[in-house]
Amino acid sequence: VFDVLVVGGGPAGAAAAIYAARKGIRTGVASERFGGQVLDTMSIENFISVQETDGPRLAAQLEAHVRQYDVDIMNLQRGSALSQDDDGITTVELESGAAVRGRSVILATGARWRQMGVPGEDQYRNKGVAYCPHCDGPLFKGKRVAVIGGGNSGVEAAIDLAGIVSHVTLVEFDSQLRADEVLQRKLRSLSNVRIITSAQTTEVLGDGKRVNGLVYRDRAGGDSHRVELEGVFVQIGLLPNTEWLKGTIELSPRGEIVVDDAGRTSLPGVFAAGDATTVPYKQIVIAMGEGAKAALSAFDHLIRTSSP
Ligand code: FAD
Image (cartoon, rainbow, N blue to C red; front, side, top):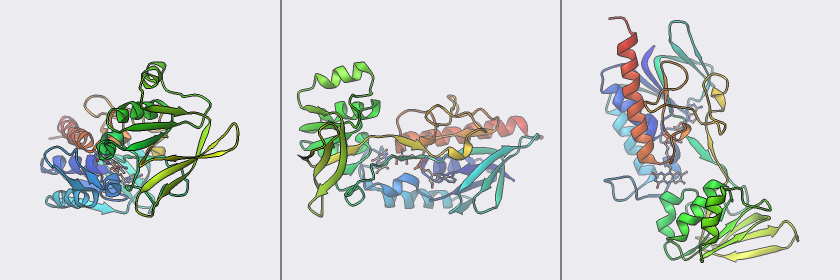
């Protein structure tokens, strides 16, 4: 039985593991893919104190830092169910058929961006196709971009980007935007934004190296149109990797693990951190801070509940 069992090996899980191991307690990390979303990232310029790095490099450094401690890393392991005994021990069943147990558990399974699933999207990921305006917005300074999705995150992204890039085209599938009225009003007040509704994005175009356009189909008239641009921000949803927790832990309507300000979940002894939780703003620096916090909360739980 681990004192602290971390599920997920992204920035949140790595930070939690290091903070737990530094307390001298038995720490394990079970993760599907150590590094998490960071592995899919190219340029990272907002990880404070590191002026510039890239995803694979940061992921390798995360793992090296965790390995500096006595942490049991279980890679390529996907949690499929969670349960708790009367004595407060939490069991995480793995898809491999094995099970791991912890006196405390930190859930840090992160999230994934919903993709459009159109030709060009995969080919030009990190070459013009982006998912995170806070991360990649400045890379498109003075250029033309589209934002796909007219919900709150899409409209917020468009407002944010309009202050950095030269022009934003917001493309919404529905006949109207779904964002809060106050955001829509702000968006409509911006002179360098064009809003296209009833539009289905059908292809991302490029020259083989980088994005140079977008094709959408007008769902009312049926015609296809081409927009010349340099970047496409896809904002059609961030899906937390929490499907396997449904029914055992309180999740928000969006599927995020509900945590309090100490990272506690609805189950005593089970904590959560990072993109999988209700904590707003999904960023590396935030996930790491939350992971550290969850580990300290887990340690606090252990010293209060374990017999001397
Ligand atoms: P994740 O990084 O998602 O890690 C989750 C971990 O859990 C992974 O190890 C995964 O394999 C594992 N896992 C998932 N499900 C299970 C399961 N059932 N059982 C076991 N393990 C599981 N942020 C920035 O701050 N700056 C940037 O420049 C930046 N650029 C980005 C670019 C892209 C393309 C993307 C996709 C994201 C970017 N982000 C950036 C966001 C940042 O990567 C995330 O906020 C951060 O990685 C979240 O950390 P996390 O540990 O919560 O989750």
